[in-house]
Image (cartoon, rainbow, N blue to C red):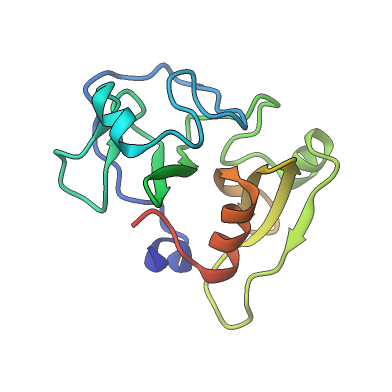
Length: 161
């Protein structure tokens, strides 16, 4: 887990059974067929969680560029892929000035000195949040889910692997 965040590298993702249309939207409830708080067993029973693939963990069938993070059997975070966007249209590559316009109440998070981690901007709404990792110019990674877990991911440097 730590390596993915520390290096700034995306998690390992495998091809799903069903392709997803470009520009999929992930809101703070989740995806159209996956909600934050869903259990691993429920998603497996519905055929959405695939554990039969090699890699760093289970994948979501039909969501090839999105990686799930489970804690105590519950989906707590999703790492968004390059083709996924927030309802406000933010994707990987969005300039920071545009991000700040679309999410005016952002909490800045500074990466620890001497690391190769990205700084972050947290857009919190209730118990959910988007964590935008950036290089000072543009969004480089987006993580969505429970705000406390997003903050913890940032502070502890853990990821989906």
